[in-house]
Length: 112
Image 1 (cartoon, rainbow, N blue to C red):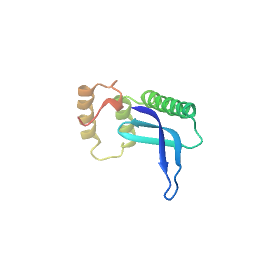
Image 2: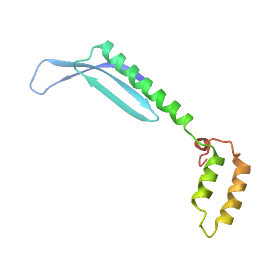
Image 3: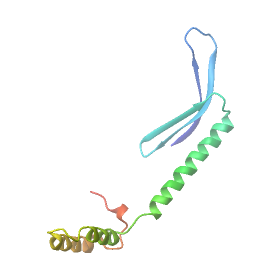
């Protein structure tokens, strides 16, 4: 959800109202608000577009940068070669590879 709006407020003891343009955006349940008194409506819309573009780029990078479950298993086994119970770990990981699939992106595997 994204919205450009104008905020107005009064300082205590003054009669004049102050105005500022800005935007509110909610991403993954986290709300971000930015208002500046020097912005016009056009400036606030441009800044909102920049923020939305940055968020889209971050999401696409996180989707591309993920490794598969099979690659994660190989990294784990390489890092834990001296572990005493590595044979049991290999057995359990082979079972999990059959369930999830070795080509499944690691980011798609959740607790649910």
